Image (cartoon, one colour):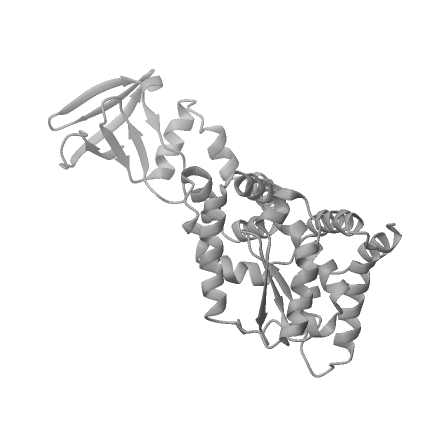
Length: 335
């Protein structure tokens, strides 16, 4: 058969003839004359109508344009294609491979990605959390936040309750309460990775002070378990890898504000934060059912605002912290 030979040292192409002599692969033509054992050469698999390549030890190679005829020659000499090549030409194998690939990708996204995000979040030091949170706060202040219009006496009353709130020492040291007006977010509360908790004016308008404390206790649970940071990291696979391997938190900083505002906590994360809030409320001689009442109060408040979308009405907090009937029943059953 005709083929094109490359010596692996120059770009020169040589027209040659190839044939198989017993267990030897023979190349001849012009200045080229070589015989190599069949077992010492590598023959590429069939990929559509592309040329077949024969690679030799030392870097030389032959390009065979008539792949179909070359395949017949190999078959005549009992040189079978590789198992992978056979799989590639079998529709059943290709279909099964596609299903397996989809299963692997889905499992990685649903299981592997959250585990990696959790591990990454747990190993980040406090100074990295502060740096990330400062960037998030600047972005929010420049976009959706404005100065709070809550009356000073109401703000002082909430701060007094917050300062008196008993929490685990490590969490209490990190927490800081702040107020913001944010019509685009509606009734909402948001905890930054550093521990700053923002309460919007709409949320304060929808709840009394005791129920606001219940929401704060729940947000403190998200801070303690680093849930927000985990959701931020999960929003960028590349950010996870960069943060994991080089410890550079800036890889996720750009997407953090949007990820935090749109983060919808999973049922498991909400349960963790609920359990934390229950312990905090008990520690402060407050009934755990206050949190369930707060969530139900937000629902009732939103029901009275039919003209507003859920993202800008009182239900905005529930869009990121979904209050399932199971959660509400569990909270009401705690004593």
